[in-house]
Amino acid sequence: MPHPGVVEVPHGRRVADLVGGADRTVLLGGYHGRWTKAGDLLVDRAALRARGATWGAGVVAVLPGATCPVGEVARVARWLAGESAGQCGPCVFGLDSLASDVEGLAANAPVDLSRLSRRLGLVRGRGACAHPDGAVGFLASALTAFADDVAVHATGRGCGRPTLGVLPTGAER
Ligand code: SF4
Image (tube, rainbow, N blue to C red; front, side, top):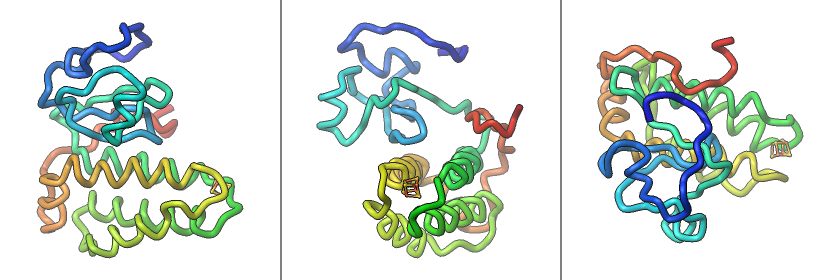
């Protein structure tokens, strides 16, 4: 989909047809959704749920090759941390720590990936609402979907691409 917008697609359509191929990495379900390969996934809530994905609010995003996916995910991680209502410790402190880890990774700072993974597990299921779970699902799936980029950033060299800020967070207004 070359331009952002609202489109109506028939139930059962292949996600790959929407995003330009089965090999494309796609975010399904918005910022409480999951990053995944389009593969043979279908636009079908039950079928997506059965595969560990979600249609959520119907938000679908793909990243252009020119931007750094780790930087894009870091921007959204910081936004998600800022959206905490400030009532539950694991949400307030956990999402902030996760955002800091991913920001560090994007900036090629030394980040302990096993600690990041542990932190994801510590935040999951700990809030009074589903916000932390949604954020953890987004981040954990991003670390898997962009594992090659994460590994390059973890070496301190980075991927060499700028972060263009294509995933909206409100900061671009
Ligand atoms: S888990 Fe939900 S209720 Fe608790 S602080 Fe976060 S947003 Fe608020």
